[in-house]
Image 1 (cartoon, rainbow, N blue to C red):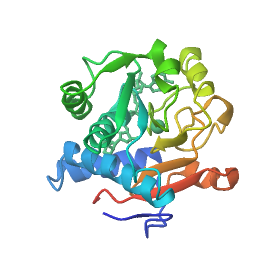
Image 2 (image 1 turned 90 degrees about the vertical axis):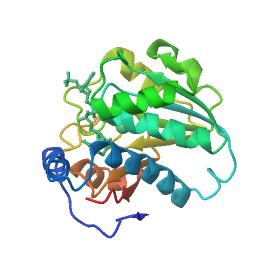
Image 3 (image 1 turned 60 degrees about the vertical axis):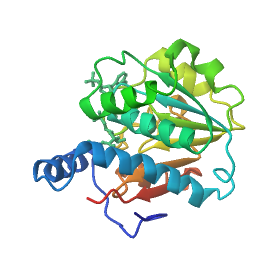
Image 4 (image 1 turned 45 degrees about the vertical axis):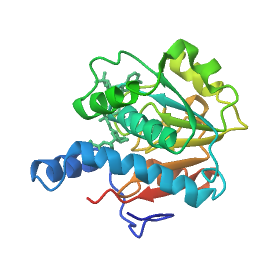
Length: 217
Ligand SMILES: NC(=O)C1=CN([C@@H]2O[C@H](COP(=O)(O)OP(=O)(O)OC[C@H]3O[C@@H](n4cnc5c(N)ncnc54)[C@H](OP(=O)(O)O)[C@@H]3O)[C@@H](O)[C@H]2O)[C@@H](O)CC1
Ligand SMILES: [K+]
């Protein structure tokens, strides 16, 4: 698996095109969703190490914000991987955690066998003192603006933490129609999968770094 600024892949796919590609790969039996999700989680950590070589060199404290879909599923994978590397990990879940999509539910359940999940209202306190905050709230499945309860947390993310978005900074549509960054997760780095989406191109000169993780599609 390689991650790099362009991942050697200069393609740009819309959310719908990406979802079709993933669906086709899974339908063809080439790969399972759970394998893609594991590769996504691994790819985020590899991209973090590439961006900031020191951050993952020694264990610290991480807070993972997990949403109600497969983007949240990636977050549960990352929580498990970081804990396996000795990190103190706090997970905060938005919404119910008993009816996630299957692959996300599997990874949620794997996580809860070894760690806690805090409810969303505790997000601000859960992020306090974190060295690393991972935004796994919404990815390419965002369909509408963030609710006030979610947008508020985006404002409370400690700026001294390293701030990484899984796939897309939560609050911005992957196809980049609404570029209102004010109500979005303040990502320093977004790690997207397979190739960039229009939002990554649109945010290129915003100061946010973009890495592409190859998930074998
Ligand atoms: N196998 C794969 O597919 C792989 C997928 N991968 C990962 O999955 C991500 C895509 O996952 P996803 O399609 O589940 O969408 P996601 O972004 O998690 O959110 C959807 C959920 O949020 C909800 N919702 C939307 N807007 C909302 C709002 N404003 N406020 C509140 N809720 C809102 C929406 O609900 P609904 O719109 O149905 O009401 C739905 O429940 C992708 O970005 C990548 O990270 C990787 O692992 C690679 C393999
Ligand atoms: K995200």
